[in-house]
Image (cartoon, rainbow, N blue to C red; front, side, top):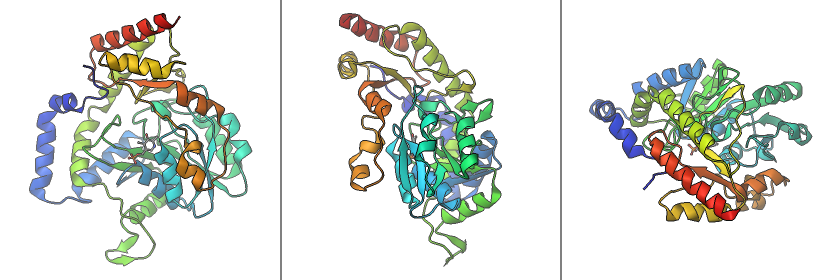
Length: 365
Ligand SMILES: *Cc1c(COP(=O)(O)O)cnc(C)c1O
């Protein structure tokens, strides 16, 4: 039986360090916004080549807080991509902004040729998503933003450690947003998130908004929210950060092996000028649903990221946000399949999964 993700195996590989980090927090009995959080903020922001990091409750609120911190307000328009976690959209909505959706490209990222036609006088920001772990075309996004006076908030929730032209994602735009949801490449034992930035004014603003908008305790000068990273999560994340590069490397090796073994499905394309960290390994197959059950019957779990594009979600349509036409994202929703890619898979697991996929493909030809 193959697992889609194996956090048990991961834990056993670092059990002693995790256990002592957690018991240290419990012994100190400081659970919210203490030393573990501020150390992890320093360590993770440095890892991202940013001068500031603000630990928050989750990835969605990282996006909300980064946008609010940059002055995005009710009625402003924010451009993002169709095939993404719907929490990208919800982060924009939580900031009071109107999400404006652009189609995906052949690399599953935002189609940079379709951004400018969506810009109106109300547009204030772009939220590019480094989907599945591959950085999107940031030079082009940043050029469009500069020309039109827009802010750029990177949704790097799937791309911890990914590189674009040798630079860490999260450090390229005005702010970078990360999620530490349990299954991400760097995952907590629950929820967590961070905003990273090189803009110290923005960092101060986000730090203050995440904690209720208090400048002085119990004096609330703005309407903030409660979105604080907790000490137990930060302690776990500090330990796991030491292994992130190695785990990302193992994901990339797994992807290379799939790339060699799979011949009869459409493989994910990666660009040479960037490092993909393979949060997900997503193939395409016109008989996706049959392939998915074929694998399930052979003990292989697979998932769909995502089965319904953001612009077609019921809550999006009911909110009367601007309609979008996204043919590629809609096609992907019917064809994409995420295969197990986690760092604790064995070579033999990938050989087995690949041979099951190849057998299915042969059956269909
Ligand atoms: C996980 C994820 C989010 C949301 O993160 P949460 O911590 O679950 O709120 C946002 N965007 C993308 C692309 C994600 O993968």
